[in-house]
Length: 382
Length: 237
Image 1: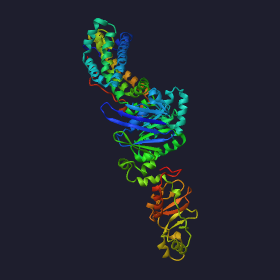
Image 2: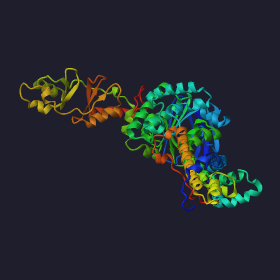
Image 3: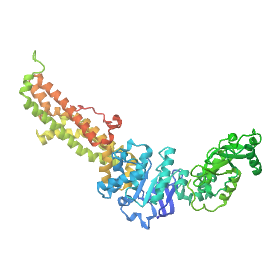
Image 4: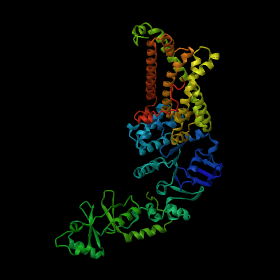
């Protein structure tokens, strides 16, 4: 656990970067410091490994004051990843990763073996080992940066806007990778970003900083979106927070209906009768493997030529589907909004239709979420 | 001189070992020693200036003022103390290289990207280890670029040292050539001096390539961007 107790950083010119910060960052979890520039989030991060010394207050890792330890020795026990990776241009990928083990006095051979192991962990091909940093893409450089930070297996990992210099697609990939790594490694991660979406996606807990270096709110991402502490936080998280919060609730709780899903071979007349009995304006046609084909309008079924089947009339595309087992309510809502039929199609891992849900029915589920205190156990990640 | 050929091959053959060979070796020694001296002074000076920036403007002015003193004057100034020993040439020529080497050490260290330096601190490098294992290696291409300029300038300037009788190829040009109105030693002296500059420069390029493998497939202009300091070589004759 990392503890901030009344930590203040005041510069000689009088600027207060961090003002009376008190926080407890739980072991084995990812805590994100988020806020606009000048809110002291990076300064707070750097006080943990003594890159910046606090003016007053105390920072402790597992109860031990960081100031009781030699800065260089302390830093070797804390992984650090920065924007632009900060790789050493004169060292190969392998030797960059082996940096801290070598500082700790490991033999070159053992350090390199460890580095090779980590290249695999962060998803770098072995043939990259002998390359120099400038020969890599931005995303690959960041992976090397993460591998280097993990090399000596430090319990604490500090990440200072590590992914903000790469393009959005690569960034999402790196975030996924970090989440996957963290599932296995369970490090105490402190992650600084100015991007609230990244904060909500990565963090087990999020600390929102405001200008002047004070803490505006410290809570889980879901609570942050549900109940911003004040106007500043509400504005900072963005006005679509209601929709974004749906990411934290699984789609598996939705009541899907299967009675409007019919085989493509069903005769039009029969399908028409079912639609009328259900009072449903749309029916979903599926193939023999139970995969979606398209939506058929009940009105068209009524007027269909005799002998035609549901499949002949299922001409309206079903848009994109959501996976019932793994996707969130947000994905389900998105699928329903984008569907011409106003209905989302839920599928299982094999792509077979589980059922469909209309926007109106989704609304009930969203209301239920709005009043829930906490997300259900096993909540999905955004 | 009238009617005599510019190059008397016979003279060259007869004098190949001495004085031609001897003077060439002297020249090499008189160039190498000031470079070494200059580097030994420029590294700590440049490192200090890079670390404590307010130090740099006075140091920069100082080394430039040194460079502005005519070499011949410095040689004569030193004669009473060092006599006709090699030091009379080595000390002034070594001081001259500072005008090129110090700015290159400073700018080499200054162009170490901040995120690289920050990362080194955060990894747990102490100040000295950071300097030796990270900052100097990253600055090396710029430092070597300065060394190349200084080497060529020094090789050219050593010739002047013979005016006070210290040896080198200048001696060949002056004593054997001008005094006797005999062109061959002059031509031999000039050609060997230029050839020496070429060879030393080439060796430095090779040394840099061996020492900085990470710069090999980079833009060659970015690799060896020489930080010249205004003064052209030979400005001290």
